[in-house]
Length: 143
Ligand code: DQA
Image (cartoon, rainbow, N blue to C red; front, side):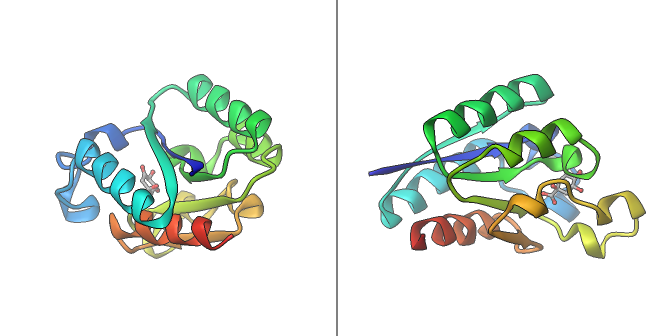
């Protein structure tokens, strides 16, 4: 089975408790379980990780570059300002799909309207809630 990583950035570990009116009631543990199940149906061996530490995310992205592992990335707030994440995404050799639970472009804060991930993503999936991760894995499986 093809390996695929689902990498979630800061504050996503609090899914289910964090602003449920925006991010829904599914916890990160439940999301991880769903992703593994969706992956299995699609022939992908999915591993889900979450970190609040940018350096840890960079290490994961660098390893994904070395191993040519496809990535579904929700870089959360780093999406909007981290040039280190931008540089790490630039090095990926397997497909990258950008996911957001909400649709940052439709939110009022101006800073959410920029993404450093988009230039390197084969697709951006935003505003589909947790289901966006399923759509992202389907996109990877099609490649
Ligand atoms: C998010 C959107 C970002 O703007 C925000 O900083 C997040 C989550 C989303 O999944 O909708 O933390 O990436």
